[in-house]
Length: 65
Image 1 (cartoon, rainbow, N blue to C red):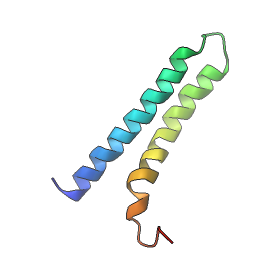
Image 2: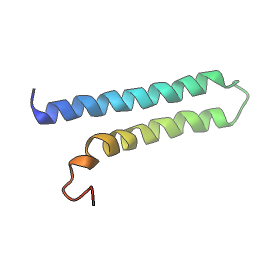
Image 3: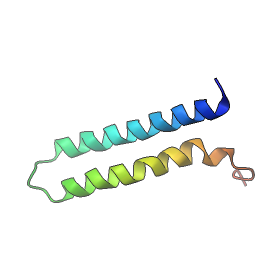
């Protein structure tokens, strides 16, 4: 498998994992709470960012300085 494909699969796995954690937290809260919507949208927005930072950011030259 090429490096690009491995990184993309890893990125997708991280995004799905973060989304599942967010959906789990979302489902535990009662429907009447307003923070429930914030958790749902916050998770969907931050999941790709977390995936990018975990998968692609370490590959940038000079990222460890």
